[in-house]
Length: 107
Image (cartoon, rainbow, N blue to C red; front, side, top):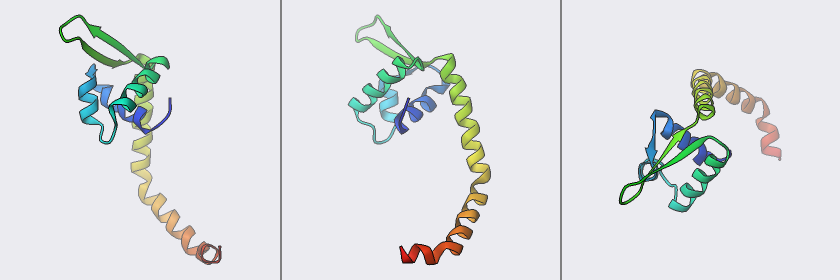
């Protein structure tokens, strides 16, 4: 799994089965082709299942596998950590930049 599109699909599909068109509308900036390729890769990696319902037109849904649900929980913890520590990180960056500013200007 790689890329921001994969993460966005995992987040979008976390609430349950989701249709291709819902993903396409919900993920800003993704092309149809990129969505198709990313879904295929996620399916290949065992992170989503693809179900085709025998209707006219066919209804296709994507759903997270148990492994992907575990990954989603980890992503939530990671984003929670980042949000909790964003002020600390911003202050650390500012302190570093203030100390190393001469180096940055000489480079």
